[in-house]
Length: 333
Image (cartoon, rainbow, N blue to C red; front, side, top):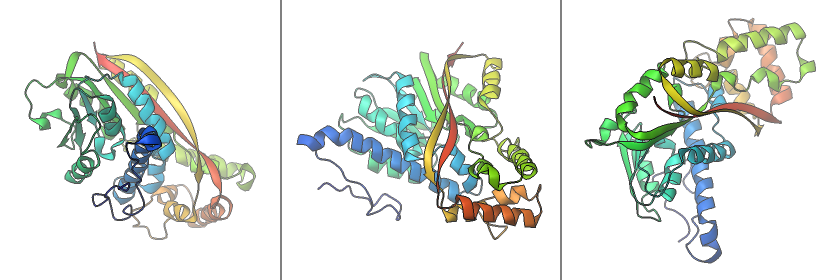
């Protein structure tokens, strides 16, 4: 009775998790922590799987999006704290398909339904099954809308006290413009809380190679190339930094209540398979364009030498993987 039915999960996860503590004795005391860790693991899996399967986001870039389970636990806790929710807060979770925030809000809000927008009917099905039974009996009202528009709920005069989400703004080229579309759905006293991983400030792969293993001139050129890759103006995910977004929001007359940039450092095992995805043998590989992007700066021989350096010196090691996240609390002026 302790193992959750997993038919709603992708095949690769069925049978691996999840232990579900009972509501009696010691197991009852650990129930919430088990649920939180499970949701973070699922969110990490869904984030990485979507990244690997998408033609719009490459694997090397996905690693900068902060999708480790440990990091997601911290991410959820900070967003929840800044949301300042109570038992009767009317809240909307955007980009809710990974389930990270929705589960926590359903545990904390017991007198209002919790609303969530997801990008696909499959995400809706998974979340509907995962959170079918809540301790409070409160339902998750889930709607599918890839544009993030609450009109999909088809409820007149719906006004939320909180609109919250992880990695919501980075999907939009015009971030302040997207926020404008949400203004009709926030109450006069309500506010927005977003947590955004900042790919432009994420881990540079060149920093994983010990200093002595690259010639100074080559490393300098590599760092210059990486700057162009990570700060790609044509990529909406990485074309911004906290400072540029702050200027954009102030220019659009948003009131920034709280603003915090945090750097995380997570021990990460670099596997040989990851190196191969950074430097694919086939140019049409859907997994990675890191090596392909570097080909504009280096010769095939130089790239092959760099790949071999990664394979011989980085693969199989545990590195400190750096990522930067931005947390914000906003309301209308």
